[in-house]
Amino acid sequence: MSNTGTTQDPASGGHPRLVFSSGGMAAADSAAAAGVQREFALLPGRTVIGSGAGVNLRLAGLADRHAEVRRNESGQWVYVHLGPPDASKVNGQPVTEAVLHTGDRIEIGDWLLSYARDEYADHGGLDDVADQTIAEPPNTET
Image 1: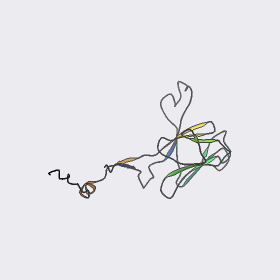
Image 2: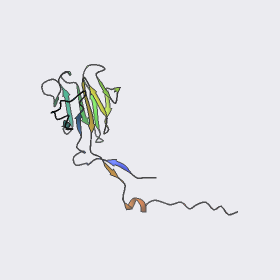
Image 3: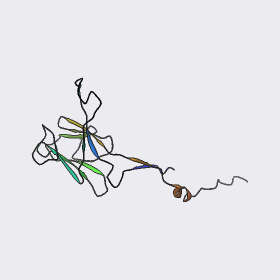
């Protein structure tokens, strides 16, 4: 059994962010054609997304307060749909609320975003090995 898992940097929360996906053809001299992706770092606690005044991430074509991404008490980031019915999808599925994982694709109105958070492999330490009990093979002598 492996003790390998993933964790996030607890001090910064793993730099959670939304990455804009560009569809179609990019103009030859654009940042998208050069491989530059636009990112929006999520704010501590909660980020409100919409087209109205007072939102943190303003995107044209959305309801004034369309959605929010908030950090729950377990340190996970959760997408919450606030806008009109059937207007948000996470990984192609309509949602009202979804815990986000690195690589999740969020469709919000005509916008396509990906959720990213730096994760680090956690392989356990030598103490983990010392605490394991190794079973003896069964005695097969008769």
